[in-house]
Length: 307
Picture 1: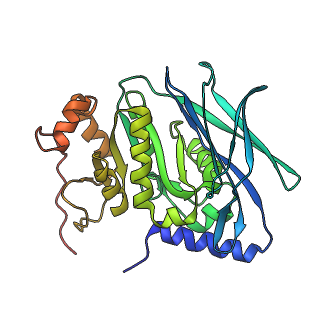
Picture 2 (picture 1 turned 90 degrees about the vertical axis):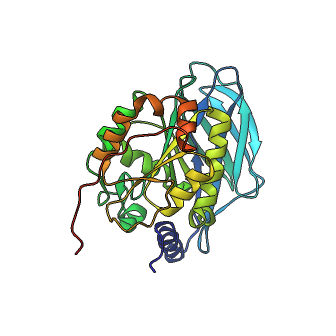
């Protein structure tokens, strides 16, 4: 049995770190979700190269700012993550995190996303779902030119983003956040928050990480009801949080459990959303469909002879 994509990525990143030898310190700033009448959670992670990958740096104060206004300060935990809940200005489109560590000044920007109240939110995986990922190039190449998007993925997600909220949730570690954003933008994908793992341990144990992050998204955004992915870990994490699970799979090998809606390509995903639009946009009806109390339409898979 082959190793999973998240394990392969972790092994490659770990080997790269060992080969590099010297230590590098990085600051990864997460995107934020603005919700009216609630405090906004801002998050940044301070990490350095370590044996086997990247390790968080604990006990370092990080300052969060909006333009020249200081929003507050938070200290990194054992994972190197600093979190600040604050009243973000209603017109904020981005924020900045900055710190001084070992004499070096580090800073980075995070984007602020707004989700219309009551809108259904889709969680979407990246590797193997929207990207035919070349893992070596993902780690080594600045622009990840070898990874190609799946046919129609960008167009379908752009269409869906007009009626649904969208969040990208990936097993990629945090130091690949900015590269992932650049790749999505360069390949025509709609702009949306990208959530990465805080460490390689979470990249390997991605099912638990994704389930926990989806639970957090539900608390912050409310109507998170649909997940799109391609792996068993996606299928299980989505179902654990009571999401309608849509799996992109062209192998016909029946490796996914019966709760998952398995579709061959992004055109079929588009047809599925078109056929079930009223249910998929209604949280109560979608919840009933997940529980088997309301029927949804599925595209028919065309017969292909066994080889």
